Image (cartoon, rainbow, N blue to C red; front, side, top):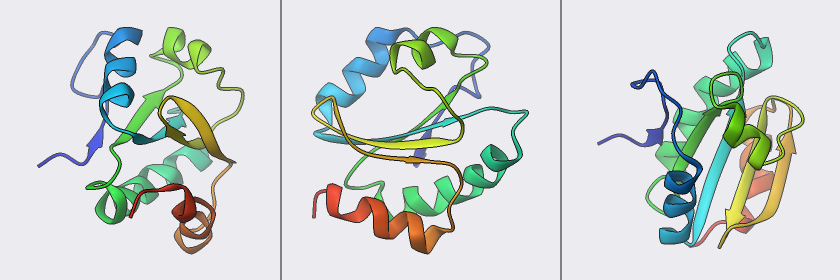
Length: 115
């Protein structure tokens, strides 16, 4: 079962409506914005798998490549990479910019995720 949803399997950008559909269905969604050229984003990629293992059953984990998915990155107003956000019913309730070790990231986001 896939835990981190991404566009890596597709050569086309995902429509904004598809992303909206995901976080309208799930009350809480974790969105990670990354760029292939950024070293911190590369480290965040490994962290996403850990986050998905811990939280994936409670909140889908979505990966946005800001280079390939420019329209979505612009719509989400991503200004730095990597950025990890927790959305609750479509509203940002937590945002962490930059790479942080898993223990610190967990500490920052856990209170915003459903039990």
